[in-house]
Image 1 (cartoon, rainbow over the protein chains, first blue to last red):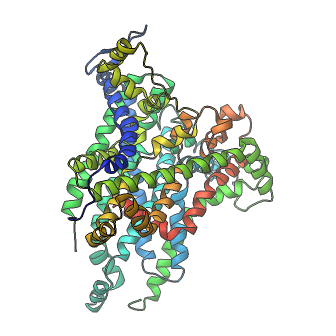
Image 2: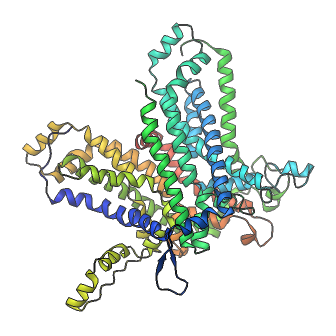
Length: 293
Length: 309
């Protein structure tokens, strides 16, 4: 730990103040407000909010639309995470072999990270549109077979594919960095013992990647629960018939289109608890159980 | 290369190229769509090769969305967020590391917990706060009875109001708090040897002089790495500007324009969808952050890996 400090003075406080003020006003106050709204109900003729206990939560949890939203969010989270991570890991393992064109491969797999979620959504909306998209061939043979604007399952599939596509670059960067930090002497020792490249992938690289895999697993799942708004908004708008109404999108729709602050707040609290649980898992278990030196 | 593996090398290239195809193909299709006429882009077999309408479509999309002023706005907001985040991260971490006072751990945790409160989950109340950023203080004054006390003493009615809707401040301020940036700076400051602090103190340098003359020059790589990822983050903001800015003519950001380019029943009125304009607009919007990531690749990768691990 540090031994030498500057003498404590007003400077220390003045340097802290801006960030603390901002997180108070824009993080803690709104979160407290959400808790307040979640347990109260606004009176229709004014006169402030009345305490209603868990009533808002009961309403949300007995709403079949809410459970449909939870279900599709879980499908989205698991689907995008699995697809993106498998693809990113496979590509990182082969890019790490540093064959000819290594740098070109690397750039080409990193840049999609920079694309804004709504841009990804809009691009995939075009790519998968039933009339002029990539699958319009199918419709010329069997009209109406592919139509994500009508079929719920196909709409969910497009959202998952777009979400996974967007996540690949992020995981790829982490996998590649982890692979490159494996000491060369380890690889050489394994080669001396007669392990061929594919065996080294299985028995050396993958085990050494476990911390990265767990880290990315939690981060990707958390992100897909909270960060899906942009993709859904331009790709499907939550439709057809609420089939892609992810939890974040439903909070937005209920809060800003339905003006149901209490309902939206109750959903926010549930999502907040979910994010906290995931973050907790990440710091508590992932960091401790999986380690190597 | 440890051993010669010609067969495996070919297999590797095949896998990498097919991965590349999956990644690049959707964007290629979007690009091709942006180079064709309305008829060509809406005909059933999708076009796979570019046409000659690219600049015409780009121009049309540019004018339709009025991208000129929106690029300026987005640049202002992005630079504001980058500068704000780096400054806040730096000075907060400096205070936490180079001064010895009680409650440092508590403050560290207060900042840490904001990681679990992403904007999306507290969106409705955060919007309410943006409508009056001084509301929290007003409520505190009301609840503690200070408002009525002051009114009784001086006859002045206290009504604090600071509306952030439709302003650059409203776009920037709620986005500048940064837990990850503060951690990164804290990690870096912890590696500064005590001797450096002692030497500075012996030379009579105060804390601010030490920060400005010694630490900031030393943290240039940190700044470059953070700036790259924060710029991309700020440029790509969508939900927040969508809500806070209703006056899009003056304060609109480019990414939000995408919501107007979606060719659905609302925008085409049941007519043929303007995919060629929509895709041209998409390309315009995605280009600047892509350029940043490609040109600043080294800093970008370092920033990303350092802030999240």
